[in-house]
Length: 89
Image (cartoon, rainbow, N blue to C red):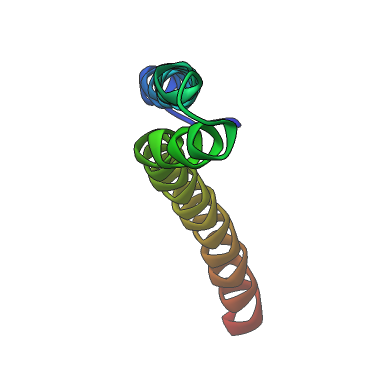
């Protein structure tokens, strides 16, 4: 993704990596904590363990999508204003 502000892009990409790391860590730690009791319980706990990290991934992806939409709307507004100026002059 390309953000106009490089620092914002770095922070968002870093946080997205952290969120995916939390998904992996939550999944593996939950799975191996309950693996010795039963395999279906381990699968269910792995899914539940991944949910907090997946929530943050979803939240960051929503932020990225909204930022890209805002940038695109700004471009469209500039083009429309330019067309309106040409029409009026």
